[in-house]
Image (tube, rainbow over all chains, first blue to last red; front, top):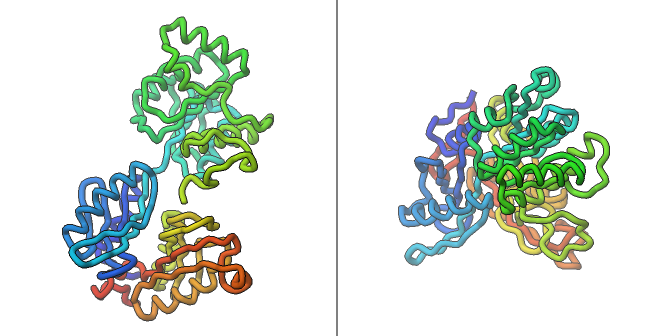
Length: 261
Length: 115
């Protein structure tokens, strides 16, 4: 076995990534001290780029880039020296929270794991919410939606898919989700189901602004009919939301193809 | 780099040295975005990618050199039309790739000793 010192930048970065902590690593890629590294963790930094002034500027920029989930090379001028520093960010994985351990949820869990999401599946029905049915899920919570939401910390990088098809589960899940800062809330159901649901939510005192946060019918319009196709349709909408896009063929788009260049 | 950690760890466990190549800048359109990573081991294994396959061969050679010298390197790949059939990017962009030994703080002598 090789013996890297436990405080080496790589080891510390690896540790942070394993714990899903937001981390960044800055490397001098051009100019004095090429190869020098600074690892930026939530409460500390490890290493140095060669100048305390440069370190301070880079730490501030790295925290901003982490919020934007972007990596970038920037040029810094310290005294006479110009240096390019590549700041690579490792934002914690986005969370997909699925209410309803139904057939679509199984495909959704599989595909979302491939895309790097952390996946939590919740359903009050223990027959459905089982490890056998969801081998890839990071966590399975057998509970009612409001109980589940109470136990979780929902950050803005959370995406919620409500798939139960049953108002007694769906509606508490929607009401609870609207109290969080989740980036995406989608609810399964036909146009008719969704219209009726909206009426009931309005009657329960939900304002229009909150109602507009709920995507229902859930997913992008790709003609999905099998559970797997529906999972792709839902994930496509989640990816588009994550990158501030609406979905649609690239042949009709004019902007940058990639969100991150 | 995150998705390459399993490979990197298994190579290191086998006593190999590892070099990391990362896309640090993209101009125009390029097949892989900033942050795309390729890892290369001293015994010649390769994981990940920095382009759609056009420059991996060249980066692999440079990475072997970096593992020998311990010195990081900044590479730039781009093409003009005449060069399109040489080493280059088919879609016409320019990329900069930084190649470095893993855990080798330059000059700090921290490079991994062979067991």
